[in-house]
Length: 86
Image (cartoon, rainbow, N blue to C red):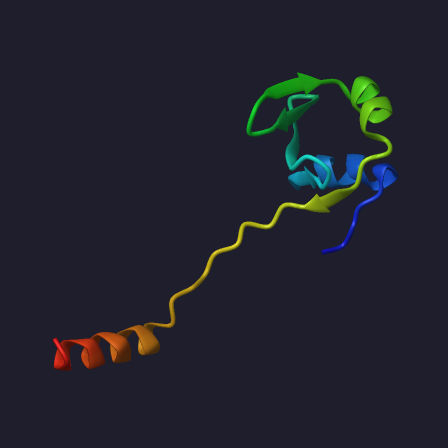
């Protein structure tokens, strides 16, 4: 994954991307002129002017939703094989 520097964060967020703070796995999103922060233990909003000094030394990556696609052919072969031996 490509690490994103603090000087690039604003543009990524304005372009609609969701970022993740590597250090604490906080998700960051920009909407309605505010930065939204989501963590498993808390969530918050703040303006960029507060976000920048607090997070300037953190490391960021793009959030990419991982979806494992099922290979339909392999899935069908498995169920045909499994039904023979049950």
